Amino acid sequence: MPVVRTNAGCDLSRELRGLARDLPKDAPIIVMIHGYRYSPTQPGNDPHRHILALNPETRAHRALSWPRALGFGTGSADEGIALAFGWEATGRLGRAYRHAGETGNALARTVSELADLAGRPIALIGHSLGARVALQALHHAQAGSIGRVILLTGAEFRDTAADALDSPAGRYAEILNITSRENDLFDFAIEMWLGYGRRQALGFGLARPARNWIDVQIDHDGTLAALSDFGFPVDRTALRLSHWTPYLRRGLFDFYRTALRQPWALPMHMLRTRLPGRIEPRWSRLLAPPPPAGNLRA
Image (tube, rainbow, N blue to C red; front, side):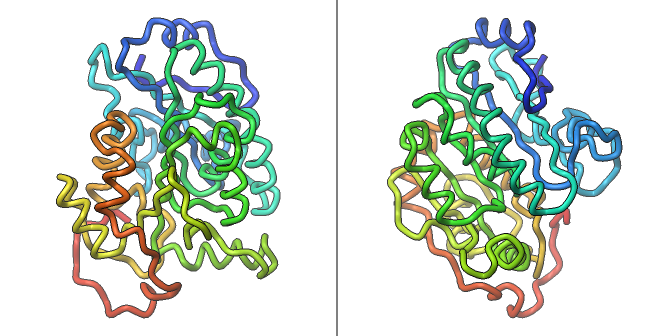
């Protein structure tokens, strides 16, 4: 079974334990974490029927199957385990933000146990508040239990992310922070509503460089050129405002899939050397000339 469902606070199932113990040597375990406004208890907002499903049960235009895009569902014996991690992310933004922090503790228990059973670090990918969940898990997970982490327009603050990185698990993890100027309005909103205008969002990247952290601005021409050189041509059509292009823009999941499944093929030192790593000024996308028509999904 390539996709296994679990929710925050649930113990590992007997099936998942067995799969982890018997996993082929080079097969990955990738935990997928949804963001705001999903709830496993609400059929209409159930992430297990939406982006975390191998075959989403909805025709919503944002219902791209993450596990399928990450290479699961092929029937290969070594494709690994896609763990669809659900949590309660509905209600007011402030409440969901606080709950994401608490959920990080539950995720840490899950990945620490899985890493012990499988004998390998666990990869994480999370969008929006799911990125906050992933970062908060670093505070509580066993050192070395979390490997590569991809944050998709994380709804988090720079200082909180830096604190998470300065934890035992955080020092061993490798973080790819996917940012976009298309997300500026959403970053600004959490700064005003949650940070009271006194804290900067993670869309600016870390305030200080870290050896195991790389900022990747996906609507920057230099970044897209570098990704193309790596063999990952990405649709260059940019929207003025969007919170979902990190997983809807064509070609990006090819990069994520390789980065998580075969991190040795995209080592951090090479990414740091070849990717620009710069963050353009806020509102630069909003004030840019209208883009030509393209193939963006959102």
